[in-house]
Image (tube, rainbow, N blue to C red):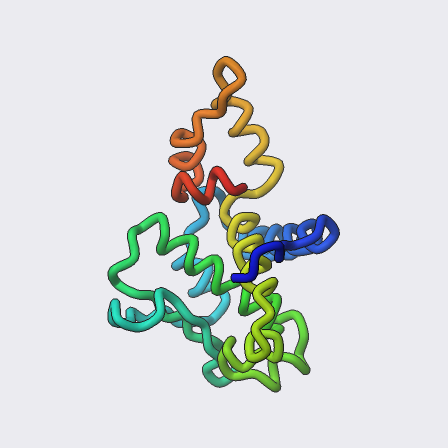
Length: 170
């Protein structure tokens, strides 16, 4: 990814609202069951060989398939699937933009992907973080795990079922 590329405040807020809306519409609570989310959204999950991409999303008819490497650790697996949800909703238009959805088969067919816009990766990461660690609950949990002005990041990560890196970034 290019250095200096990030998601601005307004876009972060918008992505958070979309992630919250999807999670709430599916009635998913923390720790978010990403496998159940795929099922509720009408998608399919498939395992891919460790030599392929860690994860990908592609259109399959009017639905989608998320491929995930069977070599990915459980907390990373959940984040990777949520990251692909970010591409699915934000960049492919699933259930959000019928025209965009009609004109893309795989995330790599996104115009921004083809021309190397790395902000889409940041946006998908932002979506995953917001989907798995809702902002209001995250703030409450983080505060409950604060001792002597230091956050107990491992405990926060455990609460949400994510990696320490994901919790630290959030």
